[in-house]
Length: 104
Image (cartoon, rainbow, N blue to C red):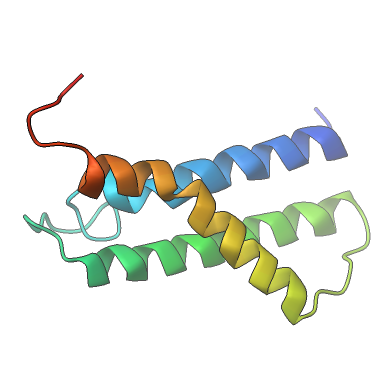
């Protein structure tokens, strides 16, 4: 089965949404490591950074597999960082901003 550009874009987007929220949904270090309760915000930010690099790597590999890679400059990485942080906002809200008494 051959992957099209459209399915590759959607796949990377879904991967980015999951990766951006994952640090806020689990107490395990790097998702599979030992459980830390409560996990500090520093660990969550480090995981967010590492998962962002992983999403960039996955996108780069898919781009290479589908054709020629486009050169990326600092503007691309700045925009990606802002988008990745925005995609992680629901997980941040769920972890830190929801009211303690509301579980609905």
